[in-house]
Image 1 (cartoon, rainbow, N blue to C red):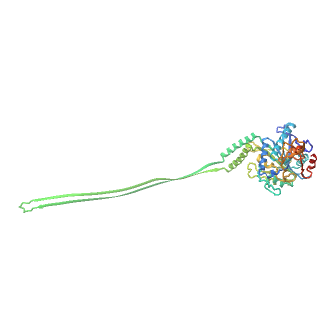
Image 2: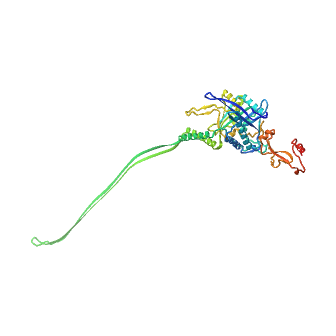
Length: 510
C-alpha cells in the first residue's frame, strides 16, 4: 500500500508470480488505484437517463482499454463503517515503475470521465484504514460465490424532486441488492478486462459462419402426391328403318264391235290404253355413339418443415451474433469476473437468493444469469484471488472435436450489460448519502484575481473536484479562482452567513 500523506491510499502494489504449463515461472508487477464514492448527486438521483449516461463511462473505459475494478464492501464489525463503494483500475508492468505509471494514468482517465458525467457526485481518496479493513475482511470471508451470466437491465424513471416523497422508481438492480443485504457483512468484487477488438471481430466472423451453416439445416420443403386413374368406355348403337313398295297398273279398253252372222261380214275398231306406277320407299336410320375416357384424380401437398432442435440452436446463435455486432459497433466487450464473499454459509445462501431475485434476465439465451457456489476448496481459492484482485483463470474444455475452452468463472458482457453491475446507487444508506440538496450555484468570475482586498476562493456548485476534495478535507466544490475587491469599490459592507461560517474573519480582513 503506497500512501504519500499516510492517511489516504494512492495505490496498491502487487508483485505476482505465475507458473506456466511448461514449468517456467513469470513474474510481473501490478498497481491498483481506487477512489471512493461518498455521495450521489441530486441531479443523478432525478435523472431519467441515469443508467444510460453511466454506460457511456464504461464505453469510454473500453475505448481506452482500461481494466476496471469495483469493490462494494459492507463493514459492520467490530466498528460500523457501513457501505464502502470503490471504483478503481489496475495495470501491470514488468517493473514497479511501469505498472505504477500505467495505473496512475488510467485512474486519472476514469476520474475525469466519472466527474464529467456525474458532475456533483462526491468522490474522494480512500483512507488507509478502510483499505486495510476491506482486505482483512476478504481474507476471513472464505464463503465465496460467483455471479455469472447476462443480467437484466432495468431503466428508471428517476426519483421525485421532493426529498420527503418516497419513490421506488429509482430501484435498479444494484439498489435493490444493497438494500436487501444491508444487515449482512460481505464483499463484492468485480474485475472487467476489455476484450481486444480483433478478437471480437474474429469471434463475430466465426459465429456468423456457424449460424449460416446451421441455418441451411433449419428448414426445408417436402411434398406428398397421390394419383388415381379410372378407365371408362361407353358405346351406344341405335338403328331403325322401314320400307314400302306400292305398284299400281291401270288398263283401259275402249272399242266398237260390229257383229254379223257367220256368213256376214263384221268389223272391229278399238283402243287400248295401259299404264302403271311403281312406288318404292326405303328409309334406314342408324345412330352410334362411342365414348372412351380415362378419369385421373390426383392431389399434391407441399409444406415447409422446421427442425426444432436446429431452430433452437439458430436462435441462440442469432442472439449471440446480435450481441457481438453491438460490441464491434462501439458498445465494447469485457471479460467480467464477479465474486461475493462472506463469513458464513447462511449469509452466502441469503446473498445468492438476493442476487437471483434482482438480476435474472429471462431473455439471456446465450448465458443465463446465475449464482454459482463452487466446492469449498474452490471457494477458498477464489477468496485468495479476491485478496490479490486477480481473476481466476481456470478453464473448462469443450467435449467436442474442436477442442475449444472457456473460462470457468468468467462472463462476457457488453458495456450496456456491465453498467447494470457498476452504476452508482441512488439510495441513502450507512456510508453512502444521496438525500441531500446540492449547494447553491455561484458565478465563477475570472476578473477578481488581483485586487487589494482578498476575500477567498470561489465555490463552484456545478462541479465536485476530486483533487480539491483531497486538498481541502473533502470539500471538492472549491476552485482555484480568487475573489478580491478593489479599494475603489468599497462603500458599505454587509456580512451574512451561518454560524461559524467565517463572518468575523472576513470582517477583520476588511
